[in-house]
Image (cartoon, rainbow, N blue to C red; front, side, top):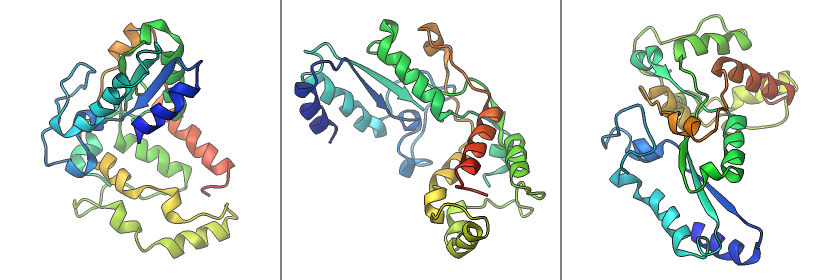
Length: 236
């Protein structure tokens, strides 16, 4: 599909100079369906780490670009890697990637010659612990009791939310939210992955050394996006 897009766009876009491929942290940990089944790289993840055998499909995107007319046209390619649970994850350091920051880096990579034909990690640039961030999130929705289950067992949001559609419909109605379904509000399997993944931390040194100095305060970033969701009547 990626090859077909390039073959259609490049001959018809004479001013095209840059293609950005956003891959995510699967580059370092492997496909989601293989998490726990293959050995990921040791953290912190840097862009020069060898590719996992299970992520060879990501390399094919670059090869399709190189084999096509992209290189002949002088178009450069950039890659960005990106960005309730267990007690170990609850207390471990984590990273996040603000969507606006990702966009800023992609714009920088498109216009700065120092970024040409390079791969870069991207995250907010700070560290946080879920036990601290969860407190902030709970306060935004007036939740007083939160944290790890007393039983110590891992809670799956996918399982917890699978029969809560009617509950969400009532919340939407009572709070006059925009009509939406529960599965449109939360990607629960991905939340399970994030809240169950211990010490997935990438390094931002290469990006900074090449000239991108953007960052976000993860706490403020979370509050900002919650405020936007409330303002747009997505959540109460």
